[in-house]
Length: 108
Image 1 (tube, helix red, strand yellow):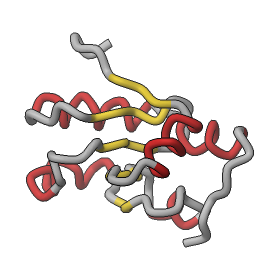
Image 2 (spheres, one colour):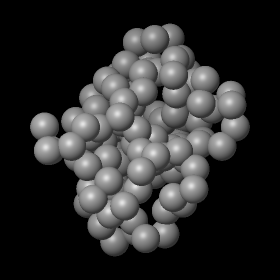
Image 3 (cartoon, helix red, strand yellow):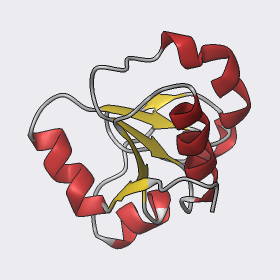
């Protein structure tokens, strides 16, 4: 895809990561999309802002990138991997898969 393998986690895997403690969730959707509902605890950082803010992200904890369907967050994973982040995961299927799994979205 991008010349490197992107680690993925599904909705229930992310739920287990949340229950296990420290995980950083970054939602790279647009402001409008984020306002329609997000995964509880996710930080909003639109994809176009990621290059400007990447240096401020924690690299010690697992980072899960989230978008609507998993495509933009896969791009974000590839970008962070190039920046030296090793513990980066893409939420497979994005917020749509999270909702389809019956998991709650938080109101903005």
